[in-house]
Length: 94
Image (cartoon, rainbow, N blue to C red; front, side, top):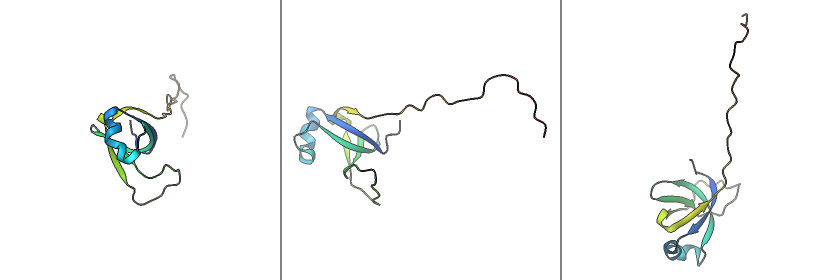
């Protein structure tokens, strides 16, 4: 699942609360914009979440999965692609 550009809420583990306290204070959760993720953790944008962001560069931070208890975000289902029904079709003349 591609998470680039996905707004999410990170809920921190006790270890995460302690490790990230200098950046987020005493909160147990915080909203982020995910830039990408890998086996180590999620790269998140430190810029305020806004739909009209167009900076050439932006500060990001790696949040290790060890620091995260859970992550919530919205996913839209793409549905089943429509396809033509099975059967014979009349031959079209060129």
